[in-house]
Image 1 (cartoon, one colour):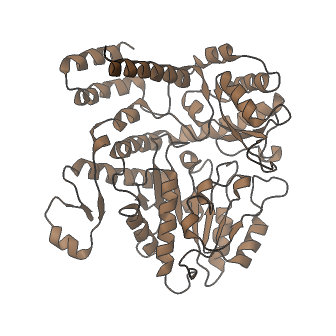
Image 2 (cartoon, helix red, strand yellow; image 1 turned 180 degrees about the horizontal axis):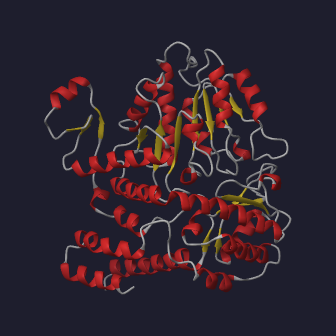
Image 3 (cartoon, one colour; image 1 turned 90 degrees about the vertical axis):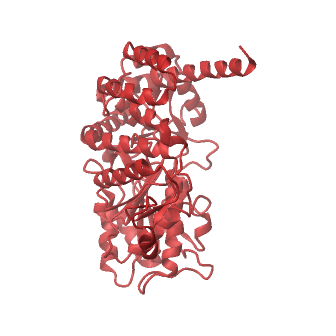
Length: 489
């Protein structure tokens, strides 16, 4: 065995070790993570993963010149050959995601949620630079004059902050949503409307990374529609809640958002990508904004938009459309159950008991009376429960966080129900409050939950696997051996 083979063999051993721990021995409760189904993973490594498919909307002259050529697909000009299949995949993905998000337009090329946000920010500047009368003007520096968003210290997402992805697109104040005095994880609607009326920001961004309760979208939309000559753009960053939007949480585009953005790998159980969706139909006064979003996607922000994960996202979206009702109901029920169980076992829970602590996949606990949040997160990890430490609204610094942020979506996919999260809360209390070592007990308990749900089942997946695997193997003997091994698992 040569040195390269030795090094790769050692790396392979560590890969398997990590896979076994993360997938079979520990409970992953990080709210920004999920595990895609086996079929989704296989699509990520299929042939498109190494390909390009740059394309843009063709102008009228281009459509006439390219008519009848392979370069024109629908209304899109493609700059690479061999892209018929990818065109089909992307168009099908747009249809499936539009159905899921109650949208009429979908931009599927962003490769992350942050990129999706930045594409919208770029498009906003270009749109307002040439916007019709009645729309807010840009600053002298051709940037946004102000933005209303959630404060970072109170759960706002980093990408919507001036020192995040918004950095190059704002030249004025950031107006933070005012918070409910009784529950700092909720927006005070009356104060919000007063502040909007006073400040008139051209861009309003809902969405959080500490996301426990619905955002007051419908109230904002009703107010804006009642104000003459004020036409801000309302964006909803659904990164954390993309997998539960709809009747069991909230439906952003139906409730009044102009644009939704987000990542596709948190509550939405797809590969790591981003997505943008809207209802900016051709007769909408903001239709040009959607045109700018397309242009800022390509050539503005992407070249190769990671075609392997594009195909994988199509499969994940088809799975989500099939299983969304059962999955979404169980995610929300599990989060509520975990919050109540943590409180019952002596762990302080944020979010307001009178508000049910949470209406999403997230639970936030306060652990500062037991130890620093970083220490508690490490202690939980050492006992096979993976979370992330979190600064809470009254913390002076992120260096010494008081909280732990928890998400239930991945373990819901592995079959946990409400009573199972009560057992998990008991383990957490033993670790956090009593500083007990329960790693073996936790690993043993995890053995009950190793079959993924809310996706194509194992038997059905194995019927599809041979044909996919055969296309990936160059040697038929190795292929036959691998298929037999899989069938015997």
